[in-house]
Image (cartoon, rainbow over all chains, first blue to last red; front, top):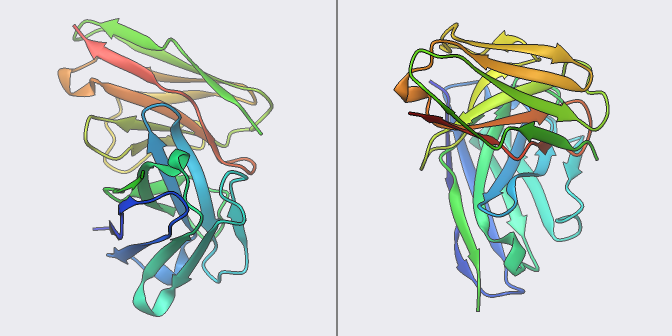
Length: 121
Length: 107
């Protein structure tokens, strides 16, 4: 079975940093594009960043561009999200997701359980 | 950015009835429209991809239709376990966007 397990969330002060990790298993991690999505009660579901299997194509939402960096380590079957300059509106549940195939512009097929990031002083 | 507008915001139906959920896109997404179901405390789960393709293990009570800017998720013979929030999402263009959701309540 496909499993995506996020970690690294927590409470951080405004301006601080966090690194989220996602461990994938049960599938050929190196084949698929991966995406981070976040969810808040107020703004709903918001796409954050996507990365293709070879890391050659990376996209970011305007709201995080310049502050967040997505990366992956196919040998470790892991996806990462380095978040710097955190703001209150970054507070959300962050989900690691897997796409249907190689391309990022495909359906999101699987979701992890999510990790909570809270930005507050 | 492609804006997805879902209606109604809330739908209250009786068991055994059918429900039609709407998703309207601000510009054409051709057939790159997906539907997710989310229950409290759980991540979203893919129901339908590419407008009308059921994901693995999704019962055939769930079906999708539409094209370009108008899409629908039809749930027939509603069961109590279908109580959830349903989201549409487009994978046609960056940024990927989601609709605001329709809450389905089973009376």
